[in-house]
Length: 123
Image (cartoon, rainbow, N blue to C red; front, top):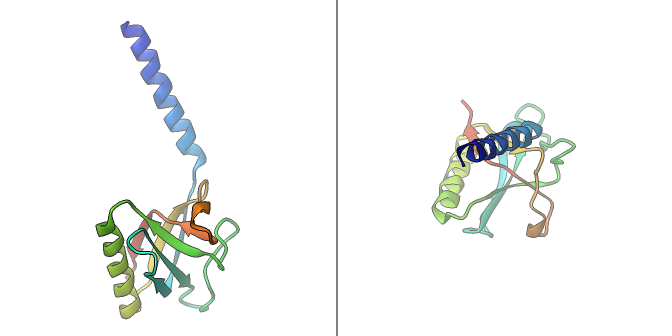
């Protein structure tokens, strides 16, 4: 029974490593131009602009016309993200968002979006 368990665990590790290797984290850094709280506490949307050119931020996977979305099952995390985005907006600080280019959007929301997983306030 022990050899079977070993191979099962080894197979699971190989699958995890190979699937995560195809995902690429992409980041954008810019200033918050809008924060929409209408969908709280289910999720939160906002948009970013380049601090130097004032142009909306985006790329081929997450176009500039799409909203960034933060989703979480915890209403407290949504509120914390809302407070962080408001602080960045009021202070004029730039933020960096990171999303997974392998699964950038959530089609169930009904509008073009880019779901991000991490947010940092830049200095």
